[in-house]
Image (cartoon, rainbow, N blue to C red; front, side, top):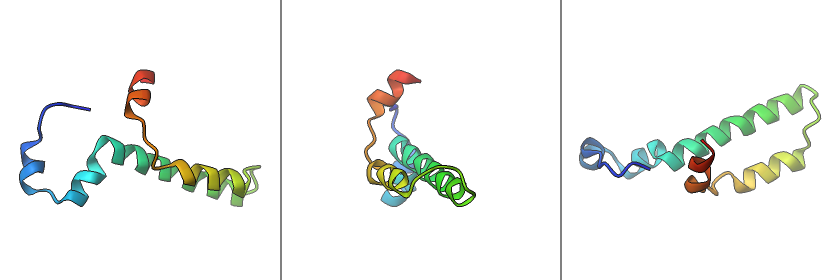
Length: 72
């Protein structure tokens, strides 16, 4: 959410690279990590339903940075 331009990224990074390292991209990657953790825990016997995991996967790309920043 920085208004300062990143000269190096603007000049040399591909759009895919910019997307990965954007604030939204980092949130999505973190959510993917936690979904993987939930799947592993479910496989180990924790009570996490496949429906719960599917629901998390459905909304993992819905990123509201204003809401996140207001809580951090």
